[in-house]
Every structure is written in C-alpha cells, then in structure tokens.
Length: 203
Image (cartoon, rainbow, N blue to C red; front, top):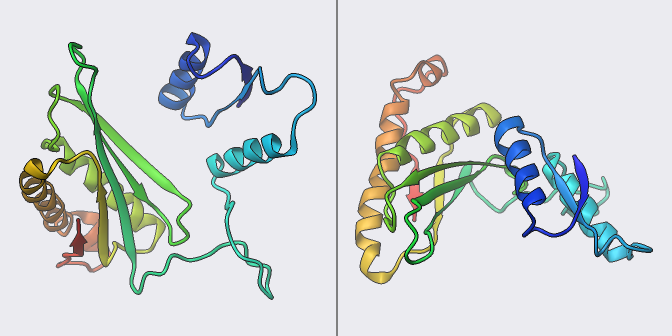
C-alpha cells in the first residue's frame, strides 16, 4: 500500500501503520505530501522505489558481474544467523512498559529479516523469559528458509551499559543455549535427523 500523507508525526500515519503492520500484515510506504508537490526529484523517486522493493522482499544492493548478479553474499564461512536485540524504554515519568525487540536475518544475502517484540517491565534492560519463545520462533523460521538451523549465531546487542553487560550476557546467551537444547526435542528437528545442535554464539 502506497499512500500520500502529511508526515510521520501525524495521527493518520500512525493509524495506517498500526492497522497495516499489526492487524493486516501488509507492507506500506508513505509519500510525504511536502516532497510530492510539483515534480519529483530523481533521488526522491529512487528512495521510494528502494523502500518498496525491500518491503516486498526484493534485493536492492549487489554487484554487476558476467552473469549480472545483483546479490552479494555475506562473507560467512558457515551458515550464520544474525540477530539484533534492543529494548525501547518509555520517557522519564511515563507509566508505559518497556518494549523488548529482536530482529533476525533470514537469508545469506543480508536482505530479509523477521522480528518479534514484547512489552516487559518498565526500565528493565535484560530480556525476560519471553525472549526464549521469540528466539525459538525465529530460529525455526530461519531453518525452514535455509534447509536447517544455523551453524553460528551472531548477536548485535544495543543499549547495554558496562555495569549491565555481565548480567545481560549471562542471561541472554543462556537463553540461546536453552532454546538450542529445546529445539532438538521438537518434531521439526527430529524429522531432519537433528538430535544434537549447539551453534557457536558470538555476542
């Protein structure tokens, strides 16, 4: 869905994004009405088309070679799954909860991602028990898309202070290990003949 609207701070923008992203699962792109007045600049059109292409699962970055291959593989030696983890906290004085979010790479080209998020106690940085469920679902999705689970897991963790790092490392790395052990007991892994699996985890 492409719609023309005022700006990202408007109520209409927020509502369209909420309905399409959360309720319908439909990708959307907003064209700012200020930028769309008169003739479009080429740079603006390119930006809009790149966003639409990415949201529809296309590849926007690559190389031109003898076979005109527009995709560039990430330089992994084995099957690697990349996670990004962060916690969004409410403004000081707000009674809203914090939101724990995980994004995970689903292909070897660095283009396709899936995400999960959950509300948790306000101002808490460390992932809760819900984190295991989120990780498990993402690894299952990766395994379906790549004919098996990853050999290595690389985690980019944002928002952690030096004083919190030890606690976050111990809690969240253990969550990945717990999920790995639990997945070996699932029908999905058993049907693939996987009875023991523990990827290399880099945090």
